[in-house]
Length: 461
Image (cartoon, rainbow, N blue to C red):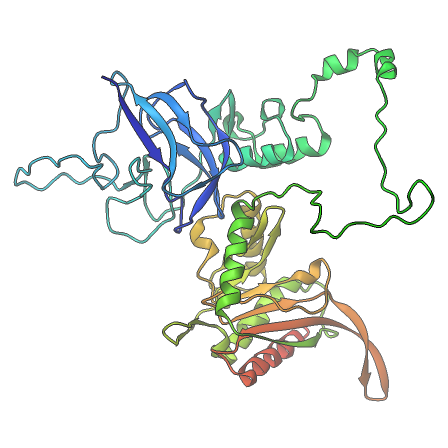
């Protein structure tokens, strides 16, 4: 009698409640082997390739591409094939799957390397040894505190990491038609973006040769579709009156997914837990010498101000009414992407010079854009920076995300007339906004923090 097994979606990292299906690598009726790629899932922090927990026939897949699957819900069902390799009970998991444990022999068990795998019972992931969390990895894979380099897996004859596959799907790029420049013929993120930009690998596009051979006459004979145009006037020449938005919904509601879904949760949670107050002022940077890096100077100013006013470089527990002052400064750098907002941590900013800050920020941005950043790098910062002025805007009320006490917003630099001895001069200024949790810091502390930032930014270099 054949045995069937349900595979529940494991926690893909940091206790996230759900994940979105990006791409199935199999279809119902296919046979899959143990640890072969089953599905690519997008969470708020990464695109993760989930391997098959068994070898056998795929009986049922829980959803289609774009569907949101709750953590712990059934992801797929299998008919186990006893003639193919199977994972032994508890192998590489550090926990049992519900069967009886083997009798003890009285001798210590041989040391096994710690592995992390997806559980096929309750969506649970455990490690086989006590250690600091090195980030969630799904699959039978060596686990340690070293950095894990994601491997490109060949699916359908194309080698690419999950993040590249997800980006290709979003940009409408056919990976099989992309010119691969990566190691061992893998398609890279740059390859996908280049193909999207030049339109050389659009999904569903006809082959280039066939397109070139198409007769021009056939194109001329094709019926011309006239799009209906919106106009403020009716056919009688009178202004059109529209209905209230609540009467007719023209657009199709779509669920938030991945990063945006998590962003919505985080912002709502922050709004309910923080008592925010914002101070605004302008930092005069007229004395700056050529070559100053704005982001590096802002980070240095935050570090200087945090050392002078430690109350702003702190965490606050609103339930226990306790605060934690930090001797080090880890700055969360807000990174805007098409998928939503990421805030990776620039660690030990108080120990970095301008070059170190720039290299660190560039590295974080590249990892965010490539969706290769570790989940551990998206939390634990002690204060944060939103340099929204690189796009537009002068002042803002950026959101403080617990447990942090403060966030700095930098607006778009401008020139303004400044009184000086004997007249006025045009000085360049950077608008600053400091939002803080008023439960944890006083207005005086926030004002002194802002003053310290302005004084540091006023220096020539």
